[in-house]
Amino acid sequence: MANTIIRPEIFAKEVIRNRDQKNVFYNFVNSEYTWELKMQWDTITVQTLPTLSFVTWGTAGNAITATDFTITSEPLVIDQVAQLRVTLKDIEKTQSNLSLEAKVAERFAEAEARLLDTVVLNQVIVTDYAAINSAGNVIAAITASKTTIFEAIEALKVKLASQNVTDNIVAFVSPLDASYIRQSDILNNSDSWLTIRQKGYMGLVSWIKIVESNALTGKKKIIAMQESAINCVVQLNQYDVRQGTDGFYENLIAEIIYGSKTFGENIKAIAIQLEN
Image (cartoon, rainbow, N blue to C red; front, side, top):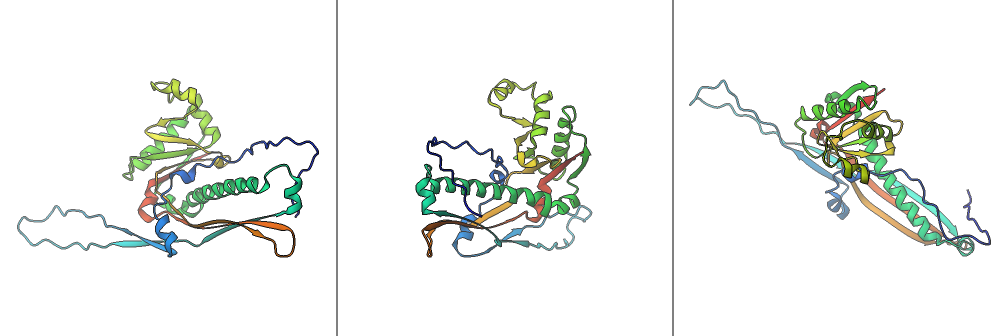
């Protein structure tokens, strides 16, 4: 497919901003292993310590039965590859009044951000969904409205608290659910609500940070999780411009090698409120 480079005689050097998907999910993942994996390896192993419990029926002074201290481990493997290439002919760059390479680079960056956000979202609603459900953290569907939205968020709060997850929680809501929150009385009793309305910040509900994401449009669910519950690591992120060998053109290429995982215990730190 050929490029479409517009070439009018008079053309303002202005580009209307693309109405891109708002990228928010990747901001709340754990990427602390990025540097280690950039060095040379493709796998990192995370250890989980066991939960110990005292035995209360023993007799003081008697022999104490030993409890095995079993450390388990799980791997995070960097095995996903995403690539992108755009070819620009020299004539296209000459006849366009835009800096095409710079504009293509901007779109590459947006594409990367959207890719990583999708990776995190799919980790929850596709890869981990069955495990989250098995942990009891998928809540029966409600009919979302301005009168039920607080109940929905409270249900997520209670569900996570029952799994000993009580701090640094963020909830991702669709634009429609964000509207229900704004229409409800949830924040009316807050002394910061006037500032919130002025700045457009949604604030905290039940001590949960509320973040609006249009990636959830049509998904019929609210996702709540403890920050850094999901690990996502980009091991290799490279861009280059390669001169064509058989003509007057350039290839703008990009490659991203990454991996993501929710380690065992962290499944309990994710909850999903379904909606009708």
